[in-house]
Amino acid sequence: MNFLPFDVEEWFHSSNFEGVIQQKEWPGYAGRVIPNVRRILEILDQANVKATFFVLGWIAEQFPHLVVEIAQAGHEVGSHGYNHRLIYNQTPEEFRADILRSLNLLKEAGVERVLGYRAPSYTITQRTLWALEILFDLGFRYDSSVFPIRFHDRYGIPEAPRRPYLIKSDFVEFPMTALRILGVSVPIASGAYFRLTPYLITKLAMKWMNGKGFPVTVNIHPWEIDPAQPRIDLPTTSKLRHYTNLDKTEKRLQQLVKDFEFSKLSDGLEIFSQTNCR
Image 1 (tube, rainbow, N blue to C red):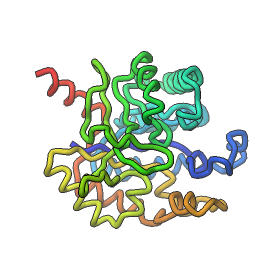
Image 2: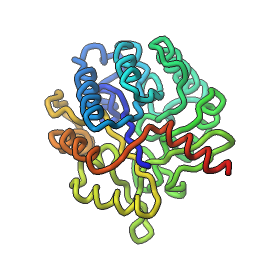
Image 3: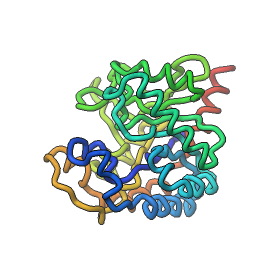
Image 4: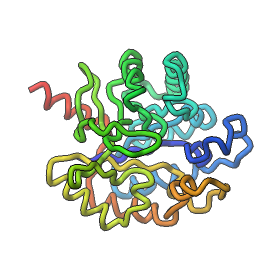
C-alpha cells in the first residue's frame, strides 16, 4: 500500500520563504491554493484515487469551503497545524495552542474527527519528539512527519525505522520514504525530491521499495503543480528547492496515479492496527 498525502498550503507558506515573507504579510499576497487543489482533486478523481490532505489551519480559516470540497470528494482531512511554524521554533505550549486552533477550524469546516498530523517541513526531529506526546494527548491516531534521513538543515531522524511503526499504544508513525543505498538513507518521492528526481528513477525506486514490502509515501504541495506562481528573490538553495521543475509536477502526478495504487493514510492505519493485533 502506498500513500499520497498533500500538504494544503499557499505558495507563500513554504518554509523556503522563511525570513523573506513574514506571516503578517500573508494577506497581501494573491492566493492560488483553491485552483491548485481543485486541479489535484480532478486528477485523483480521474484515477479513482483517494488521498489524505493535511490542511493548514490558516487555509481552513480563510477557505472553509475548500475543506468541504476535499471531504465531500471522499478524501481524508488531516491537520498541518495552523501557521506553518517549524516545531523547533515553538515551545510545547505554543505548539499545543497551534494544533488546537487548527483542530477547531477543521471542526468548524465540518471535519468530525482528525486522525493524522503532518508537521511543517517534517520538523518532528530528535529535539521535538515531545510534540508526539502532545499529538497523542490531543487524540491523534498517527503522525506522518518523520524523515529517516541525515544531512538536511531542517529535518531528519536518521535512525528512525523506514516502515510504519508504533510510537505508543494506538499511535502510529508513517515515515517519509527513504531508499537505503550503501548503508545511507536517500530520500525519494516527496516534495522537492519528487520534482528534482527524473520520474523514471522515482518509478524504479518505488517499484523496488514495494517489491521489498515497503509502502511509499509521495508527498506533494498544491503549489508544486503551479509554475505560474509569483517568483520571489530567494537565496540560491531555497530558490532551487522551491522553483525547480514546477512545470513538470502535474504531468508526473498524472503518471504516478496510473503507475501505482494509493490509499488514504487512515486506511493504512486500519491495516497496521489489524496486522499488529493478530
